[in-house]
Length: 251
Ligand SMILES: NC(=O)c1ccc[n+]([C@@H]2O[C@H](COP(=O)([O-])OP(=O)(O)OC[C@H]3O[C@@H](n4cnc5c(N)ncnc54)[C@H](O)[C@@H]3O)[C@@H](O)[C@H]2O)c1
Image (tube, rainbow, N blue to C red; front, side, top):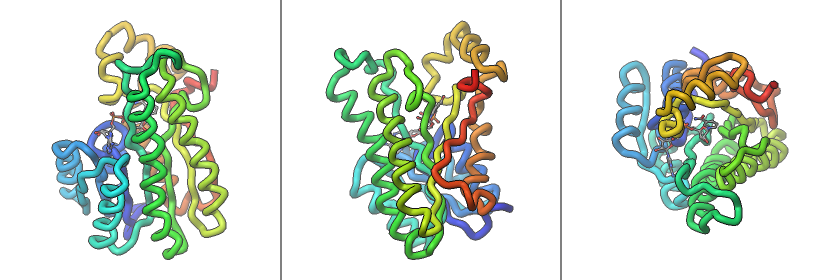
């Protein structure tokens, strides 16, 4: 077990990539705090992990400062420390995304609030505990859209580019305190976030074929790298971007 005696917070752990990471953290011996806005999925994830490990669901909207503060407080009350923060919760407002001049203020603000402010808020309330402990690992789940141009994804892409900036700034500030901060960039992963697009068999085939690995990613494909970044095996990894995309961005 690579994460024995560690405590991890995973945001958006009720579904998709976050759930796979949370379940793997639990299987590797960590106590896992599920910070998820959806109560049904959050409870279900905590129950699944509790069968062989330790988990706590705290209903949390990561864009809400009071809820983030309460969530980190509950994590500390229950477990007494926080070793790992995986910032993963995000929204892709697929029906509201548009080129910049057509995007609504509401879609921009909501996307930034969850995808960027949420990552910063969770970091803001977890880092003081890691500083006191003198150790920690923060993992930000970013996206290729934060680096490359994709059409009609203005708000989402901007938020994900911001995540990379946040990751690098935090990596520089906290590495001297033995807190490492890194980012994971998933390719096209078969999750609820992509359900609309991937329900079209043609689109499914297209997204599978544009990756050199010739398949879509699964949420479980992201779990191994997350365990690596959460464990001491990644002790000298600071400010790194770890791509898990079947070669999508290599060609
Ligand atoms: N799926 C992909 O192809 C893909 C590709 C690149 C990056 N990503 C990134 O990976 C991460 C996970 O994506 P996914 O595909 O698993 O998404 P998903 O939509 O399948 O799951 C996201 C989870 O986050 C939760 N959530 C949403 N808003 C929240 C909030 N305000 N507070 C707390 N929880 C909230 C949702 O309820 C859900 O359980 C995201 O950061 C996403 O941007 C995904």
